[in-house]
Image (spheres, rainbow over the protein chains, first blue to last red):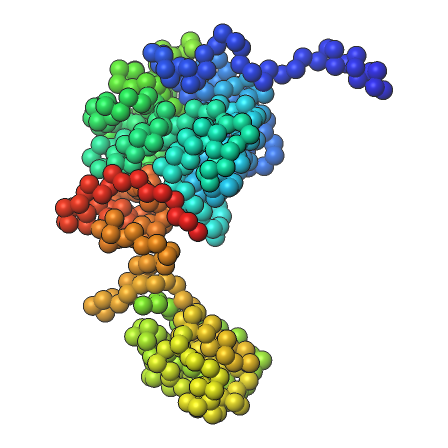
Length: 313
Length: 201
C-alpha cells in the first residue's frame, strides 16, 4: 500500500500555494502605477465551499486580489481565514477582512499570526456591523479594540511584538488596509479615515460609489494622505435596489438620474452594468483602483471588467 | 443613578412560587426616584402579593438597599423579617446583592437593572456611564463613547452611522454626532485628533 502511495504521489502535482514568481503581489501593485481591481468573495454558510471557489474561479486572472469577508452584516459564515487559505491553494491572492466585532485582542492576534503563517499577505480591518443587525442578534458584541487600535496593534506585531510587548517567534508580514465611506461632508467619518492613515493603513477600500461629484471631492480631501484609495462599486440590479441602498446603506448615494435610467431600462441588469462601467471609467482618473462587490455571485463581473476596459490584468 | 425597570408582576409572582411568607425591602434612593421601590410602590407590592395569596410578613424602606449593614440592622428595623421564607428587594441588582449577602433566605428582585444613567427634567437618561474605572469623558465633550456608542469605539464613529443616527437604532443619535456637537460648542474640536489606547479590562 505504501509503495502504491509513493508511485501515485509522483503523478500528483502539488497545488500552487505561492503565486508565480514574476507576478507582482497586491502590495507591490499598490506601490506601482497600476490600476488595481479587487473583488469580494463571501464565505459559505456551511462547510460546502464549492460555490465560493467557483465564484473566485470566474475572476481568475481578472482581478488583483480577492477580499474574503468576515461574517459580513453580522451574519455567521465560515471563517475568512479558512476560505482565504482554500483560495490561496487555488492560486488566488487574498485580502482577509477582519472585523472588531467578534474577537478580543487575543483572538485577533492569534488569527493574524495564523493567517500570516498560512500565506495570507493582505488584511483589511473594519469595525464590523453590529451583532443586533445580523442573524445572531443576541450575541455579545466584542469591539475590544476599534479599527484604529487594531491597525496600531498590527504595526507593533509587524515589528515582532504582540499587543502586550511580548516578543513574537517570527513577525507577520502583512499589507494592512482599512475601509471608509466617501462623503467628505461628514467630518467625523473623514476624521476617522485620517486616523487610519496616520496609523499606517497602506490602502483604503471604500463604500460603494455612485456619485462621482462627491467622490471627486473625497479624492481631493484624501489627496494629501498619500494612501492608495480603491473605490467600491456595486452594479445596480434594479431601480428599487438603488432606492433601498439610498435609504439603508450608510454613505451610499445613488443619484436620481441613475435611478431614472434604471427605471427606464428594458434590461435593468445590463443597464446597471453599463452604469457601473461608466463609473469605473471615471474612477480611473481619480483613484488607484476599484473594488467589486456585486450582489450575489460574480457571473457578470468579467463582462463588467470588459466593458470598463479592465479585462487584462 | 442606577436605572432599572419593573419586572411584570406575573413574573415576580412566578419567581416566588415556592414561598408563601414574603418580606419586602424597598430602596429610598434611585428606585424611589424612578417610582420602582419607594414607599408607595412597596405598599402597592405588599397589597398585590396579598391579593395573590401570599403572606406578606412585613416590609421596610432602608435609605439605600445597597447600604444595609447587617442582618441585625434589618431585624432592628422590622423583626417580622425573621418569619420570612423569601425576601423581595425593590431596588437595583446591587441593592439585591447586598441584601442577599446579609440574609440566609432566598432573595429576589422586583426590577431589571439596565444602566447607570440619570433623571433630568423628569426624563430618564439611560447609559450615561459604563463605570469602566478610568474616566476620559472630558476628552469627548462629556459624552462617554464607551457607554453611548453601541460599539464603544474610542477613535471615531463606525461606518454604520447614517444621518447622525446609530446603526443599531436609527431613532438614537450616533454618540459621535453628539461628541462632535459638544466639542464644537466648547471649542475643543482639536480633541478629535487624539489617539485613544484600548481600555484595560
